[in-house]
Image (cartoon, rainbow, N blue to C red; front, top):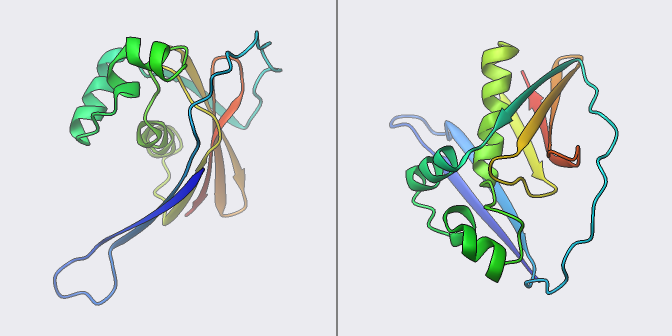
Length: 159
């Protein structure tokens, strides 16, 4: 196992502090040789606001290309299944975050001042992703669930 933390700052000319700061922490695990058993669908998702999205193969490819991410789990279905042991192409974590932030921006009409995101489980290409949002005072709590209603992404938003 390895833990990798990457920090990014975007600075504007003439400004002392960064316009955007980002920290990404990755937990890297060895490949699993176990095949997952049958998983039952969890209870339905409930929240103040809900919508769905599907990251199809075209969107996944375009997002991967935009970010110069050539990892085969995002673009090579045979590799994702046969080598890595996933059931299908894996949706990029950044794309899942983008789906949630677009839900926040377009559906909830919220402009965030800060977001914190944790990815808890993988999302797979071509499967429905349920996006859920609940307001908590001056903040929003968003979640993404896979097609079996497994909690996959958690996002805390300050406005």
